[in-house]
Image (cartoon, rainbow, N blue to C red):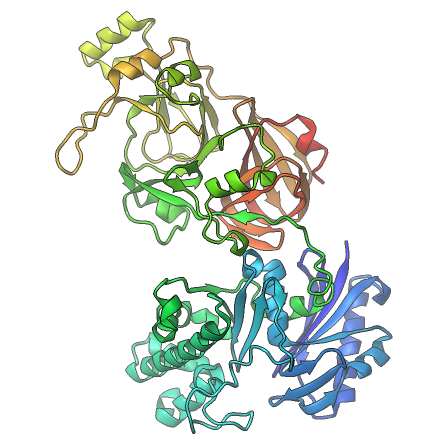
Length: 635
């Protein structure tokens, strides 16, 4: 494990941290940014705090790989000079040699907004994007530009200074000496100063920008109007960036992010309002809340050499997918609320996490594959899968019915081929949550087709079907030919072979919104039904366990392999075969990326070591694996 030190010198406080090579902050300290006694004294204080931090963690400076320092202002990194820092240091301050003399180590100077952008690129919300703006909204407004996976600096080492870009001719005076800068209107300081001029009596002596938001949240129209105007001007400034760089993704960080509904949510449409018609008509602007919080500049500064210059990262990346909602007569709000799918409707019964079906293939969220689907990756990038199948072999979904599903059966491969389908359909359910005394339809009581038809003719459905009790964390394998149905209240992770073919056997006489009964496929269903008694719950086994990680194997055959990973702390696992991963409980960090319940991602073939941290459970589906594939690689 490599360790780095990052220093984020802010306008009011300085953060110092020891950061692991996976982006996790091992330990940190804070101190006021006080330069009144001179630069040498301030640097001396920071160096002493670094020494204390190392001692507290039983480390030596020689063990540290890189030391990076983020500063508020324009930095000449090559010569170690702060060229311009209006809120703290002033003009043309040589600071790197002072640090290097006291520490006896090389250090790198970088603008704090660039450092924040780089931290997010390596370990935060920017990991999926090759091009984005990272805009910090706090005391001031900063911006780091990531272009083609690297920090864009510009020939004058000042790219991204949107906060000190005039947006109003002859406007308010800025701390930089200019007039009408965006920072005067849309930063925390700018909002507060305007409030103190417009309605000082409402602040009641509370000189915080937060007070303005509190007033707005409590219904004050003056405060709400001021904030709306600040957001409008912010969007105007950000539209200038899009027009100039043709980059469509913004990550927003800083203290004002706490007010997401007022600051972040309105921005996409407002930016498009002021943008160049060529791109605004495409409605592609994305505004995402950054993930690393106030630690982003510190983390980014720590890795400014190790990452940005050397590009010491995996050639392959985790690939995140957008889920596909599917409405159903038995659907409702349960899935939307349980998995926090905010954009879903109120009749969704299942969400496809992985599908390459024609017309229903998941879109890729990573910038590298922008606009492509999982089906596109399967066809054009076979190296990501190294599969033995010709077609993508699975449909993986999350299912949460609020009413009982129809009773159905899937064909085996022989019957499927007779009907023109390339494969049959075996299926499996892992029960994420069940209600008390919950059950499923699983099998039937008929001994042969003649007896089965007698039950059907007499409509003795309750006598025919078999109910199987299920509990949370049960796993049920459903081979082709098995009569089955989920019942309401169960929340399930479902894996099925990628033949989207189902024969509906019985549907309780339900009708659709037009009063029509749903179509049954009775003869096909009868032709497919097996008269063998289903085996029941498949026996699971723990294939690896330590204090932070447990791997449980539920199923492994030529159709699919299903494994659950329980994470409680930091662990690493090496993956050689591709894995389709879905978080089914909790949240955490995977390879520096924040993940939470409902998120799905592809671990490409040959990815190698994956770091996981947090308190979460993931289900992984893959093609058939050798028994030792994971047990030898987890640690």
